[in-house]
Image 1 (spheres, rainbow, N blue to C red):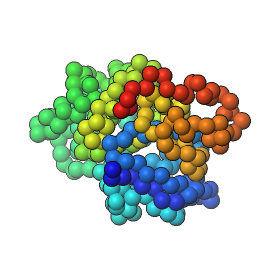
Image 2 (spheres, rainbow, N blue to C red; image 1 turned 90 degrees about the vertical axis):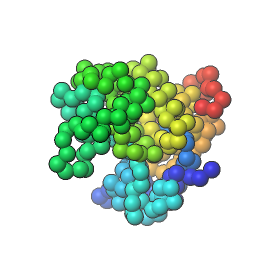
Image 3 (cartoon, helix red, strand yellow; image 1 turned 60 degrees about the vertical axis):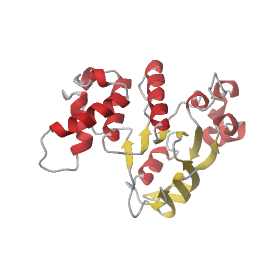
Length: 254
């Protein structure tokens, strides 16, 4: 299988701090990947490096075979602090339209020829019936799906979501994962940074354990050893019991 994202000994310095140190991994196309690690472990920095928002000091990251320094590729990114005022009375339709027109000057707020794409993207995330609802009246999980539709409207094939489960109830998290699995099956490659490792085995194909360097990468049922947990979380590793991380009804193919 062709790799979508390949990190080869990637190092990133911010100021005088080495935030990512010799990070190497490869993500296959059509994969759903969790990125886990402590606060300050470099998850957001890794996503910023993949999208070309921060420079790579040493090593490389390639997207579909092309170095990110030459072009960041067809990537959609929902950052942890998405620059959107949720108190502004935008509808789901209007938010998704921002993904289409954000870099184009002198375009009306909604164009008729955008409507079919907007409807398709909101349908893909299960929110077609909410297309004209205001996002400030939506739940946290619905807002995340609107933002997901927004980056789908950009034509992205690689999706990066930073802390998509933050402030989202368990039921909404499950709905979001179901949407992401369908997107993966349709050809998308998806990486999600998350603090919740207890449900990783049920939800993701593979997990990247990151604490400035790559502590482990692969099947969560295999990589979450006590040694890896200690490397990730130090003395706090005892918070995560092996039976909590194990397979709780994980289906074949997920």
